[in-house]
Image 1 (cartoon, rainbow, N blue to C red):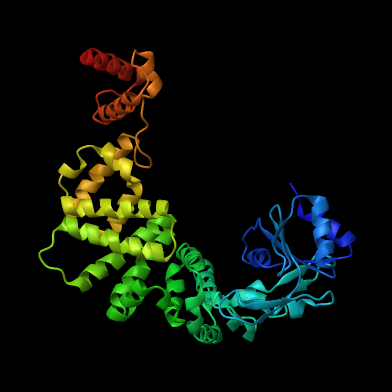
Image 2 (cartoon, one colour):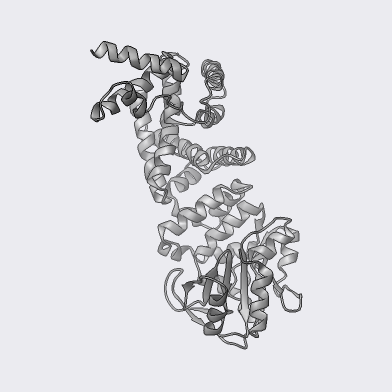
Length: 430
């Protein structure tokens, strides 16, 4: 594996002046480790840098216009000036100069905390925009007036606020508001990526509050309605839930499920539906949640997992603590991670004594049966049936399914018991 030292020596021998920039410098002052390194190479042309890197290993040219290369876990770039000449986050004209200094190149950076550098030739720390001071103050502050050239930076500001638990500087908030009209040009996948990173931050509530202050909340109509319809009450509930899940190190799917649950409840409240069954309410909530998840560009697999959590959460409410819906605990484990389901229960049904009692029993059963995190592992496979006299074919699939149902019903617990069950099944068929 390529080391930083080897890469730097190669660039220095070619006459370059490599500078370590970006997140690795920021994380160093935050006391965090970083495995990804961004290096800006001064005093070398595109062709020279490419030649040096190819001598080391396989190189991916991410963007020739921007002068960006990727080799192993290193991102190498040339210093550049970006000037706005079109709409959206791609409307830039890029220029390179061999004699460009660090201050000029740093003007394209979004925030001061990301504009720091370490000159790897002489060891000098470069901080032309007082980024270290902003880290001390816990501020997200824009570098220059060029901030307004990229609307994606609005969401990045909210994301960094959540991830680092920093406040956005009031002047940066004002610059973000100016970009409201350009937010519509952002592609759905970029919006979804920044939104999910913000949701997974240390303090999600802070990022969401700045979504409102910067007007970027308009990208998410479901959130927008919640904020401006109920003012503080429902919005504070959302923020408290997200911070609670952050403290519990919950997964992204679990956080999205909790957010969708609140948003869908608000949606149903606004519909003012009367005389509608709980089953239909569950279906409406899942449909609404699916639309929101598509808006933030989640994969079909992720959407399926989140909707399964919401569906089972609805079943808990529908059962009202009765045993009928959970006669076979194994079936529930096939649909969702029961530990995740219990986390959502603790949030939304904490005051319901009947459901709380039943969920505690559910947790005990799943721990005893070893299915709290994953479904039951089937004991029997197709080969077991074939070795016991069954002919290969479509019927084997049906037999495997029946065997798994029998295993979940407790008709056998070990492989030896399962093989005896096969022989009984064979006799019954004959």
